[in-house]
Length: 162
Image 1 (tube, rainbow, N blue to C red):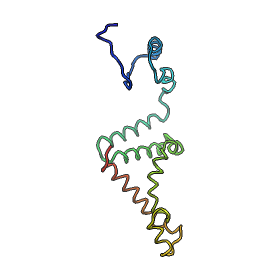
Image 2: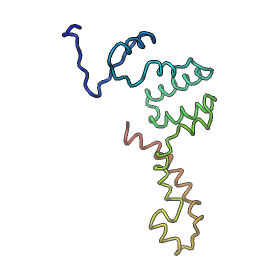
Image 3: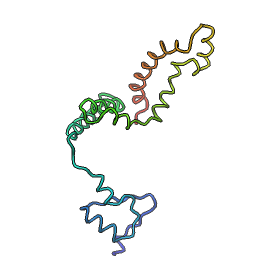
Image 4: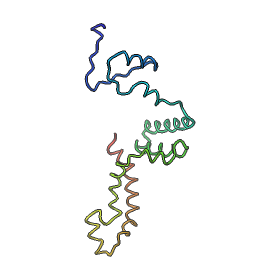
């Protein structure tokens, strides 16, 4: 090796290698290297385009147009694309649900204090005085929660852009 062409890698460095699958396999085997993903494992994940790929690529292109033009906030563009994937039957509703990060949803649904008397001290204070029952809170709370969700989806990306 030419000492002038030697590169020292440090912890956290990433190297992107390119070539044919066979070249990558032989190159990795010939050198001492810490390989996070073996080329064969990556190759097994690569799939040919399937029957829904054209629709998925069209939805992706539409989402990119929305993101680039800024017509809608990024969160709204992503939500529109997700709904479009279901509507054009690229994915099923069950597959869409499987892709949801439920921890995030639970944190957002923590705002459901509008639906129950036990969520806030104010709700608990007015319940006995007003003669309210547990089930009475959702009647006004649900429309308020839906309105809160709509406003949050539209305004949060404008206030705190990624």
